[in-house]
Image (cartoon, rainbow, N blue to C red; front, top):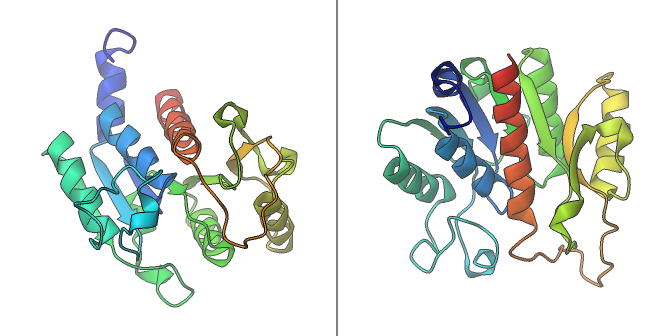
Length: 220
């Protein structure tokens, strides 16, 4: 990295902290990319455990971690990458009742990489109320082309049912700006309410999230 960035740039990344919501196909790859880029303080939020259906796309999901809490599997791997890393774990699904227990104020950046729309809205609202930068992932399921992801304001998204709902709700909440990672690809129609997914799409979304955060840190 120092072949491309100055030592001051590296120190700037080292000094920043990021709170990541969701450790699935998107969020897992995002938090690992942030750590490997030099972020030395992270908060991780996920109330789930790894299961066999996660093996096709989630970076911390292996036969060894099936049945393990996601925050615990993430912590173990991240400390193997950087033993000096400071990690705060929240083994919860975000709700109206428990979001007040998350210390947003201790972080410079929030990454929303979860699927549940009600929880996404709670996270976005909390970040805006506390004046903390946030970037949010839109839908990554039912897609096959990872090159279609882009960083845009939510007002400019298209072909994304998740973004359509979030955009409408944010207007009702009087939140006018939100940076998102969104795919321009039209989702594949299936007969199952649970989205399908493949190994090389959600992780790319997570990498784009991490890229934006690091780039924004370097600009600050």
